[in-house]
Image (cartoon, rainbow, N blue to C red; front, side):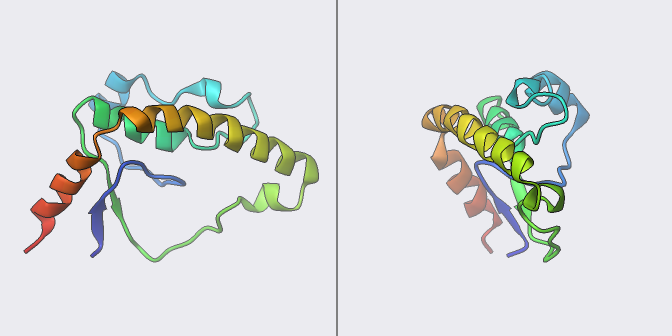
Length: 114
């Protein structure tokens, strides 16, 4: 299946309706400091969309850009920052996920079945 509804997407690219993006307030810029990796900010935005009544889907294109980021993989300082941001932001996303209606995702996927 090329298209599947999911609670959250991670590591875009993202296609978002401008109206929905603005209504959600855009990316939460507090997920990282300037010039640091904003780990999980796209997951957080996805969960916000579901809470606002929008649906989030993933389309599998079989294209990979290398998870982990080529620039942070070899730089130890950047790796530490990335790990710290992942841990902090992961906790924030977990709190949102507790409020998430998983049945909404299941119902949306049922609509895709033939």
